[in-house]
Image 1 (spheres, one colour):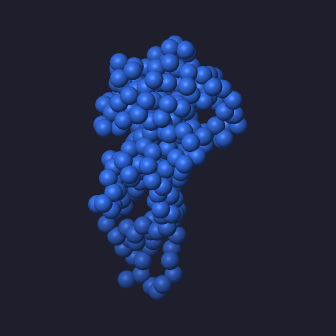
Image 2 (spheres, rainbow, N blue to C red; image 1 turned 90 degrees about the vertical axis):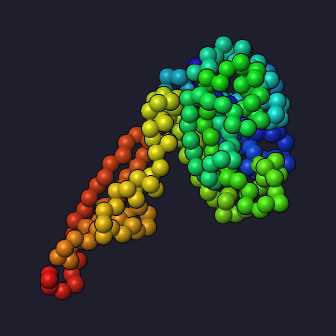
Image 3 (cartoon, one colour; image 1 turned 30 degrees about the vertical axis):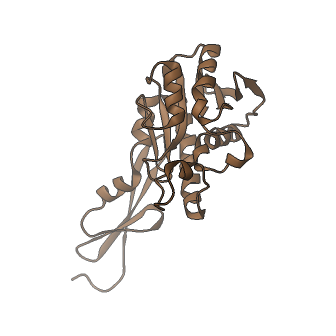
Length: 245
């Protein structure tokens, strides 16, 4: 069995704030799988079902962020879940907006919800999935004000995309494990594309790249990236533009 915990604050006034990334990720996952939030145990609301052959419980603590550990500890005892079968999803100031990172263990790094969970579980040896919300760009806004505010429209698009990637990552963790998922989730496709572009290469929209070779011949490549595999497909064609020189 896997216990997936999304962190956030209860109440409609917090629904769209940066700090409620964890709630939104598990909400999106439940909606994708058709699971209903019908359970309520240990100061958390629950949705559950099967992914592959694995029983999975999604949880949203109702204790407010800074007391998340109280609800999580009760759930861990209720379901008798070992640390390695827990996955906590939450927001991360130190990551750019929408960036997703998976780690098998680690410190709270100043996140109050994670500090509470580590304190109540007496261990930091459990996986966590972080979604970047970035630091405030306005120097007059402190960290607390930033996480409890709603992102602007351009940030909202990036954050939504990051949450969607986090949903896929949660499913992959359950199906294939943390290590394999880290190799996919923690790889930056943008950086990989830049590394793959040779001298003379030009990146085009939607992942296409155009390389020009001596003799006026060009070819295009498309990087196809999914959680299951990474494949490069190359297509060659000749561009008519006068005789080769």
